[in-house]
Image (cartoon, rainbow, N blue to C red):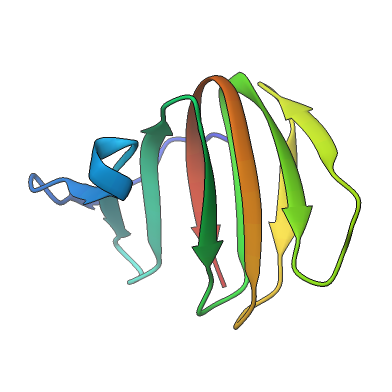
Amino acid sequence: MTEQLTGSVSARANVYFDGKCVSHTVTLADGTKKSVGVILPSTLKFNTGAPEVMELIDGACRVRLAGSEAWASYGGGQSFSVAGNTSFDIEVTQALHYVCHFG
């Protein structure tokens, strides 16, 4: 999924969960927004507005989608999808580098 893109990157970082998740917003020439970041080892709950595809570049984690009891394991080179207006729990075991595709 990683590709050459034209657009801009916000120089100001988005810092969440006391610094455990840090990302930068990327705005493509067509107005599409993505975020690029890292999540440090931790267990966190994220809420979504729009549907998301989390493309994992490096690292390891387990994910539990809202309404599910099951955890699924993911690592670099994999991705997972989350519906809009919901949430997911993520347990990061190795620093997780990602690109989040919205919409």
